[in-house]
Image (cartoon, rainbow, N blue to C red):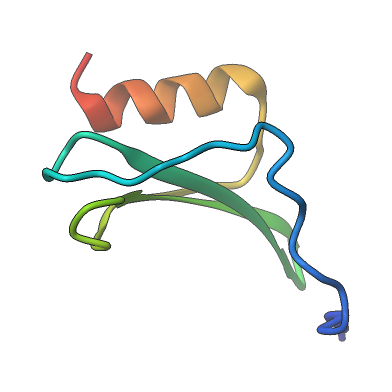
Length: 79
């Protein structure tokens, strides 16, 4: 069984971004989370529209390389 430390605080906003979107599809927030399973790690990536606050894209995979992250984002934006 894996334990999650719920006492840890969120990471600081080191870039001091100001992200207020006044229209949909202007700013997306992306997060990648690693999830432990009995068979190893699974990586879940989600993209949320900052204006509507809706999770617009979700992608999971069994490995998390830089190239795979670029491919997931490229797939999301249709390039």
